[in-house]
Image (cartoon, rainbow, N blue to C red; front, top):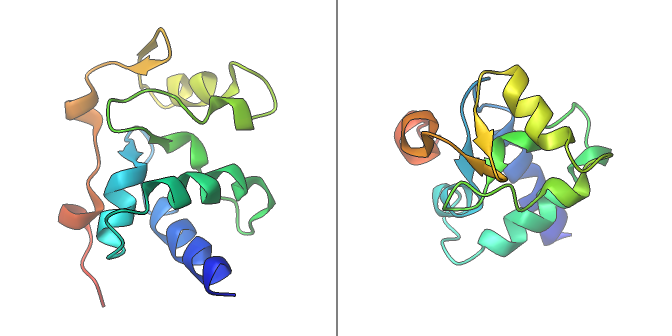
Length: 112
């Protein structure tokens, strides 16, 4: 049960990432007060296709900007295509200008 609750909290944060921006698994985990739980955030993104309302999981990448979650999408290129449609350049499965498009929930959001 606690894991489902954590997934829901992850999804709430991911739904707030603006189009044209990306964040990392670790940044989400840190924002949620679970700094060492980046892998659990990754598991949540892997299960995000079943979430409602939809979760823009394509906006979550690893700490170097790599599209490590692309294997969880319907096609190998879907994650990259979705990012490209939002103006994010990807080359060799890595977000270009990563620091410029990075969205840090610890800066952008406040905890209620």
